[in-house]
Length: 306
Image (cartoon, rainbow, N blue to C red):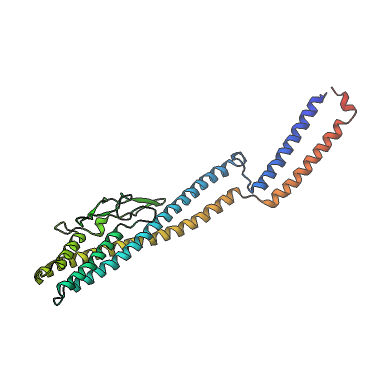
């Protein structure tokens, strides 16, 4: 059997090319720290790794969602706590205003205090999360919940009764925004706490008003304050529960993140000792093949093969 010169060169070249490719691939694996550089290296592991990476990305995004929710609810919890303090102070003033020994000037002084507290209450009801998103406007987070008319002093709600929900886990969403109407609901006559407070302030500012009229208005206002305190306390309890749930979900997500990282490591991790050993052997094989080819090509008979 006669072997052509071109055949010898082709076979030797192919062998050298294969050895060089193996050496390059092992070097790339070591540099990248993974044994799966392309799906062709291990199709099953590559497909599974892609699924795990996607799940890990979703887990990271949900963690960001929970952080946003936590910040929002934290701002809400702070606002509600201050609202409870303000409502309790207002109730103390209303109770004091019922003292039958007080003069018109005493009641007027209380009216001034209540007016300042009412404005503080409106400011708290218009709290935002620090990023311009109002807490108690329902879905209308870009609109201040309550508007105070400078001329008439009337206070009107401008939000809606809906709630914004945020995905906080794979199968869990959480409602975060609240409607101001839930904080300060209207009574059977359609009057809100703001209406009763304004009426009480006007009443206390009116000289020589009969004690019976004072008592009636203060009773309505006190009842409205009690209702608001109940509503705000209930909402505060709900927010506290939601914050605890967020912490629990964060803990689970942290464990899940570790599991994803471990699974990826198991699928893609490179055995560095073996890889370095393979690299050394491949370098030796390539050098031997190169030397063998060089020696064969220099044989005198090689020039006469046809």
